[in-house]
Image 1 (cartoon, rainbow, N blue to C red):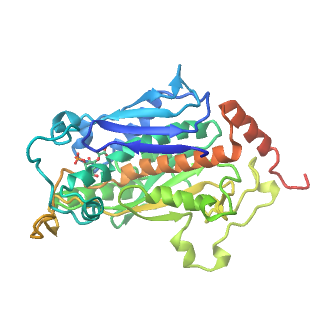
Image 2 (cartoon, rainbow, N blue to C red):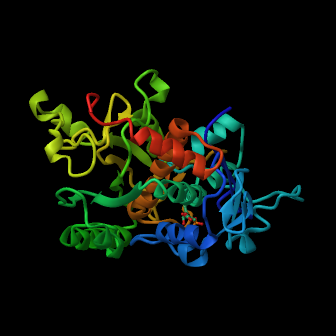
Length: 389
Ligand code: EPS
């Protein structure tokens, strides 16, 4: 067992969410307030349900931190579900007397049907509670700890909404991150952002939901994270898995992604510039079509990863479906839900990218204390110039 390990637990309407993160070096400054910033960002965004007004997520450290610094021991965090107060009977841990109310109306697009078959359940609630995107709050808390580590090495992770439904943002180069944080849909293109808001309103009116695309940028990433030597060590593969694991994500691209396949090789690759044009950073490129990754290794350019979210499958005007018990044709179950979560998905995407980069950074530089990691990082940085110099 080595490296950074992460597990989350907890149900959407249970007592709360747990996260356990092992492998963060000792001596990293971290506070609950720092984590709260990202948790707040995840709860925002136009198109979220009333549930977000009930919850004000806050992660409490249960272990791994003392006097504002990590101890090198597992970092244990708890995020309470405020909603639990009203759900104590439905989600009761102790054996239930009598017949509980069961969810049997299968929702197309959710884990409902496949999960009930796989685990042998006759109540879909046993699946939907854990399949719910509420779990991403725990990931964001862990992502914030990883973000804090990356900051120590000059690595910064951002995200923005690149599309909602068929409305695409037009953004050249690195987005204006302040504008993104001010936008209700986290979009750097203000005009497209306004149209996105209107599209969400129209979908809500129609009892429908919307998907879209979101993009993560990690800047300051050193050359040499990940590896070309084995399929599961390739960092682009790890990033793709991490982003694809976000609820409702159906596609992932690195850099120009699918678009690069449509053009010739002469336009697909990133020309290596001569040292006079490096501007203080080693081995600069003229472009970044590769999204900062070649051969599964970071190449020093920003790491750019995009995800595509399907429209949320819980519709207030439900789709036709079938009852789990009777096989009868019915309308799918409706459980209060969001209309569009693309802005939130970007914040979750940042967490996933931060987790994968932190793991790769610690794999390369090791260190039980932050000072040791830093020493190793600095020693390596001295070795990466042109070989003759
Ligand atoms: C979700 C359904 C909604 C969302 C929830 C994810 O929950 P509820 O049915 O309780 O209103 O609000 O998201 C969160 C609670 C969250 O924190 O992101 C679902 O079905 O995935």
